[in-house]
Image (tube, rainbow, N blue to C red):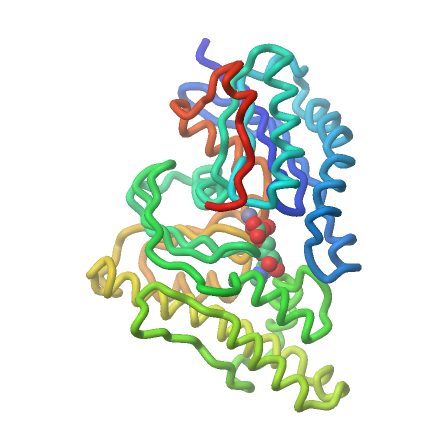
Length: 341
Ligand code: KG4
Ligand code: ZN
């Protein structure tokens, strides 16, 4: 009787993703989740080109829609609401998903839930396990790096963030300097497995006078200086060690800031901190990050890898948890995209 069937749409950056989530009073089940990524395009350009990303979404959405419904074994008429990422993100990219959502809404006068991409990343933890509120969220992706105090699905206070590059950006830009390919996070993670993380000394930015504030741009510069001081063959030979040491600096920067937030902002002792910590976003896939955080803190929960990088599962999931935020038809037709958080 109270069954909701949510179509989730994610097009905020370079991944095109659709999901159908079935929600009853007692359960929540993904019927299908399909994504298309533009990594081949990005590989060529070494990063996201907004204009190309938006055009790629437009091309990818129709076939993706087709497989997503086929796989779920339902028809478009069965959808009861649409969830779409509206902010933050690249406006041109966001608009492609928003237009799809509006088309659906118009077909059967459906409501739309405008989804906050960052909140969705952290709340994706509930796709695989229940974590109680409040929790300390660490969102680490290609576009964002932030610590949040999460009191509910739509109640998050920013406790700390980066002043320049995001952690994922540090991986990707570092990977570019090392010539390992794009996106570099996973490649560096793999290469680092056979490397010595103590071999090279990369700086950790403490910014002691600015609790919660992070910076990754100095680290990237340090890697550039190091690489320029080496012969190309030497860089090749030392690649696993360079990756392991560079990755370690990123991970330890996050760990240092987590300690600082727990002690200085939340005023708790690290070893007595039993509040859940939830880690989400693309960089949450990083094996060393998981290892270090699980070793250091008591109650660490990491979003499952398939729900870490941009995906529509997290979008539909977030919408399922905030039924009050549904914008009814026809007001939903005036929903707009926003680049900022
Ligand atoms: O969440 P996401 O898909 O996109 C944004 O919303 O930004 O995150 C993508 C980022 C990329 O920077 C990628 O290099 C990074 O996540 N990433 C990783 C790993 N897998 C993906 N970084 C470190 N280690 C990984 N295993
Ligand atoms: Zn993301």
